[in-house]
Every structure is written in C-alpha cells, then in structure tokens.
Length: 89
Image 1 (spheres, one colour):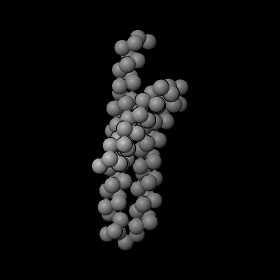
Image 2 (cartoon, rainbow, N blue to C red):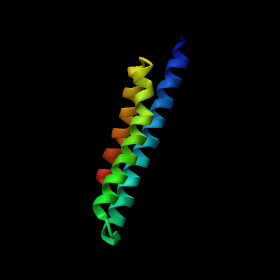
Image 3 (cartoon, rainbow, N blue to C red):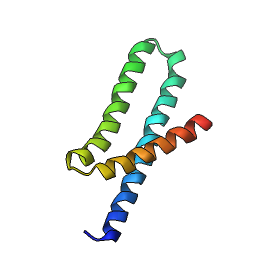
C-alpha cells in the first residue's frame, strides 16, 4: 500500500473520529438539556447512553476487527480532540 493511501486512510479515520465525537457529545448535551423536562429522566439517560455507545462502537470496532489498529487510534484521537474542545466550552 502506498504512503499516500495510508495517509488518506488515517485522515479519513481522524475525520470519522471527529464526527463521532461531535455526535456523541452533542447527543449528551441534548440529553442533559432534556432531563429536567422529562417524565422519565433515568430512562432517557440510559437510552441516550446506549444509543451513543452503539454509535461509537459501530464506528470504531470495524477498524479493529480488520486488524487496522492504527485507524482505530486515529479515530480515537479525533474523538478525544472533540472531548477536549467540548470540556473547554
């Protein structure tokens, strides 16, 4: 595999990690906004967590299962970058 292909795959994995992180923490923010108005806040939190977990696992696990840990790490870096940005806000 050429170096350019490797770099492109890593860049795509990083962007996917950024998108997944944005969706995860955006969903968390929306859930926390909805909890005070909810009739069943515990159920809302559990369902939200399970959906967000499924999103992250669905995006990250295929790279690992294909033996491409470097892609999973790149995705994780993107996810963590979003987490750092969100906690700063």
